Length: 444
Image (cartoon, rainbow, N blue to C red):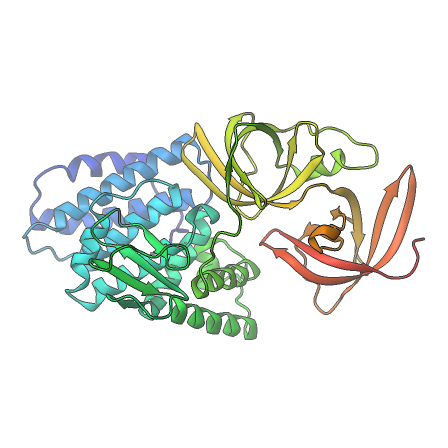
């Protein structure tokens, strides 16, 4: 099923009668006729969902919650001992996978019986086992770090590659890359690098290292033959070929070696000002500063040397997308540049984000590649104490084999022109990149 099919009906008009119908005691014949309706409904809902990112508007939340109810009622209907024949849509394991995917996309709790049911079904046939493996692989990534488009891409990928997830019921000797699932407790998946279970009974251990290697092979194939806009993944997600390649490499790294926490966290109750408009932030950091016209205020839930967890207090929340850069201002301090790592929003009135600190201060500059117009960028001063040199944050561009550029800085009304050479990247997302650089010769 491809969620980019044009809408033929208002999803709300289709959802309501289906929800009511699935509450009834239906015969096998009636259930067989409802499979196509459910396909049409989820197609319409995912089309809407993939066009947004958290925090989701109220109407999007309404239709996704309704679809979640339909999945739940449909699963209970087809679990009854009646001979339902409605192709793949009747598979309970596939419905469980769709329920998990929808929960991850909308940051909603999963049904309480989702994991127990998936584990019980996995021993019955290969199709159920593959669905469980796909669910486990999805559970290891931080869903708040990804947009619905990226999660849908991973869903499509796992339909083809889930068999490469490795399962075992005994603890591995080498913990690298392994996770565990408590099949009797809260059913959360945990990396063995982060936490070792106290008991070994009723645990399922799984590893995505072979899956990551397979993804790396897919990336190499994409590099050899870059996908065009008609590639099934591009059509289904709306992502560009470059975004798909970047996403797959990022996910392969996560599956290859699960991250462990680098810094301890400290609880805080201070407030910060936040600006997602980089053009306005650039003006605020320029030689003639102008405060951003659009900003919001957030409570600091906790902080570490690496960043902050924030909860929205007031002001606009538009422009929040995982992987995008923003500015944060603590009272009495300059604007700092951060990267949105995750967004959590169970309802439109409650939004939390996690941001990684890129630089405690920055300056507005411009950079010019050969034969291009100057573009706005942010200069990060060197931090000798952290053994970090100067760096630049700029929109992600295709540099090709080009490493030379010109840095334009303005101070006290004087324009300085500096030839520079691009160095190693520090951070890369689908929208921005932070890279080190070296100055060549004297400033003009």
